[in-house]
Length: 400
Ligand code: GLA
Image: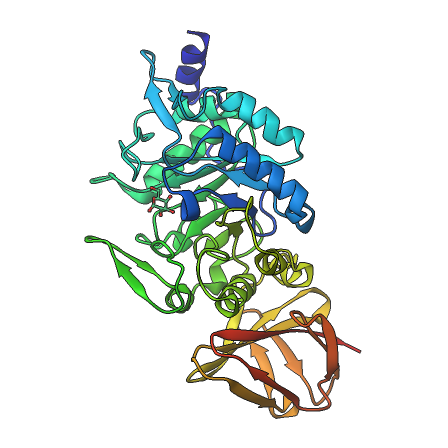
């Protein structure tokens, strides 16, 4: 009863303030989410074991923090309207689970939906926003992904603002992840609403395919990359474009996984692993845990990359970094090996959105290959390499 009264007070705005929590997600959030690998097959053992694996593998040390439960954790609402987890799947309850996750130095995320039901047909938060926000705060939840199924007649901006205000009213800091698939161009309105917003429909673990599901499609890595065009100016510390969670380790080739991870880092995307961390091959761990590559994603300037050159199968992306450094990604979209012979002095790289330029005739930069983990010369000489099909060369340049 006390809870219900408090929720009502919150709903009437007595403690409410129209704001999102600031100082959160100042670099793109890193963690894990259950959906890409496990879909609705979630339970507390999986979540605990994943948290254990996050620590024991070293991924936590590499920066991964959030353990996020996606759809289908829900049980029913009680007679007062409070949501409870599925008692069979989460018999110990969410508070105990959050305590366990926190005892490992990690944070717990959960999922709901702005409509009456989630995409998986579980109870949504429509009409229960303040009550659900209070429940999540009482459980100690640190991250909420808020989906957009079953929302006929609702306006995204209004719905997400309602949930933002409900979360803020609890005073319990929480990362707010907007998941309406880019339909209403959230990058134009969500900077002060959420910490990240999906820019596309769902990802699928393939290089350049599209998978139909009747009324909607999921997309491979390259298709999602191409949909990020023109969005870079909207991203920055505390407010990120989210091209969806990672599919590294979920069935693509190792070259494709490496390229996928590199591209997401160039995009300053949230790095939310989506594979089974408990059974991860070394080669997958080596991708997810490459600290020099992660540092590109986590750079404090928070600038998303731009495409500086498009030559059919070969594309070159540039991401300005702090201290006048930069990351360059040579992407081979095609199946065949690409030879690269890149004469730095022939290019003047200019980021028009930020008015930053790199002049290789004036300055010389040292080049580090982040996947080979070695220094590979300077911009005085041409950069020569061969890139396998569906792969990248990822470089970090810093001035002498
Ligand atoms: C939507 C989201 C996915 C996932 C599922 C869960 O499709 O875009 O990321 O959360 O719902 O049902």
